[in-house]
Image 1 (tube, helix red, strand yellow):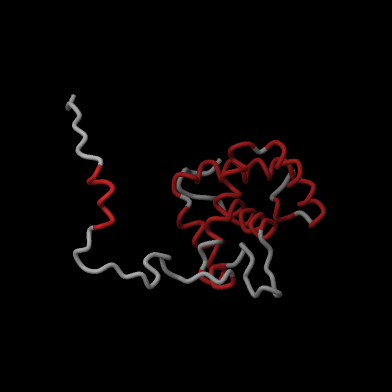
Image 2: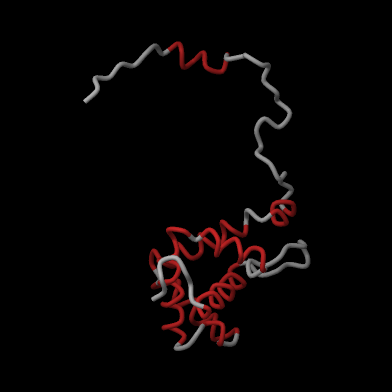
Length: 149
């Protein structure tokens, strides 16, 4: 198993392989696959507390494959992926979540979905300076006092 803050070279190669299997490149929609270098760099930079589960998932995949997943052909990868999905547990769910969250925050992917590269609020709805009327319902409830313990 890898250090909690790092993935081995074999694990990084398998992560890239898994990412390409989850979200392949699409010429039709003009979007990269999840194995794109920028998306992979984002994944590795932001793994944080998920590193241990992602490493566990990648190790499990390599164990099922009998060698690094990246070394298998497409048919072998598909067979391993099917078995992994049925028995991967929390580690499998974490691996998929990490790949998808990094993929769907990539600017190119957001543009392809027709989304703007900024927060959706206020989106042209500018609040006048000093207008606190949005807080009226909160103020109408009155104060809530609790005893400090």
